[in-house]
Amino acid sequence: MNLAQFPRRGYVKEPTPIEYLPNFSKALGAGINIYMKRDDMLPGAGGGNKTRKLDFCVADALQKGCDTLITCGAVQSNHCRLTLAWAVHEGMDCHLVLEERVPGSYNPEASGNNFLYQLLGVKSITVVPKGTDMAAAMQGVADKLKASGRKPYVIPGGASNALGALGYVACMEEILAQMFAMGVNFDHMVVPSGSAGTHGGIIAGMIGNNGNIPVTGIGVNRPKAVQENAVLTVANQALELLGVEARVPADKVVAFDDYVGPGYSLPTDAMVEAVKMLAQTEAILLDPVYSGKAMSGLIDLARKGYFPKGANVLFLHTGGSPALFAYLPTFRK
Ligand SMILES: Cc1ncc(COP(=O)(O)O)c(C=O)c1O
Image 1 (spheres, helix red, strand yellow):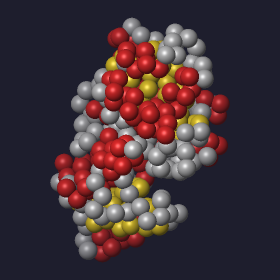
Image 2 (cartoon, helix red, strand yellow; image 1 turned 60 degrees about the horizontal axis):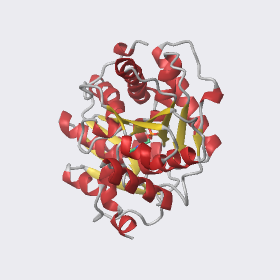
Image 3 (cartoon, rainbow, N blue to C red; image 1 turned 30 degrees about the vertical axis):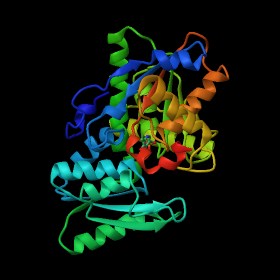
């Protein structure tokens, strides 16, 4: 697929490593080999998956002559942190609209990503209640900025539009090339599934390249059918944008909702177990909202025999560890 037809800023300078996790594979005791794609090591303050998407979205903003980025997320949003970080890098302003998905959860004194919003010099934060029309709220901020002479560019939540998803089409191509170079064939991939652009981009990259590796998404928020539809939609939009004729068969999209627990961003015992297990077997930091819950899904599925014995399973580590510092009581229990 021709990704070179789209401008990008070159934030992803080299492939992120794929590492075999021998201690964790052994501790899991399911007779499978776990590998990890280390997108937590992507450039950008604190690392994580949004750098791949913003590489394309910020290039589009600059090409359109914009000088300000506006985006939205939850109160501890990694996407907001990384949009702000790349805005700083580009000499642009950045304004955030934060949705209190858990009522009362915005605390201006909170640590984690919230602390980094302040440290990185966010221009404004608008906090809105759960269920707010985020596109309209961001447009409201954009209209005010336009009236004061700025040129704002609105990036949707998670940069999960077709353009942003191209970052994960590129990631899938990177993984296929690394598999060849390593001489390892992955039998299965497990990915976190939130605003759907990461999972959707991976699926689009898989279908567009005839990769033929089953991908299991672990949802962190929405019910299974809603999430799978969101992933399918963005995957097909990415293929259309790329000018690829193929479309994703609906049965290629799986996004389990069994690991969400009481709700988005709310801790589960299984997430705590997963975060501690990776820290204490491989010294790898997951996060409480996305990669920790996704790994709790992988652990449970492995224990239930979902992956055949001897399988090589690749987990996509999408980052997020700065959010750990907003969850200290959860881990100190
Ligand atoms: C650390 C981390 N992992 C995974 C995701 C999910 O990615 P997506 O929103 O593209 O589905 C996010 C989204 O914010 C994230 O911050």
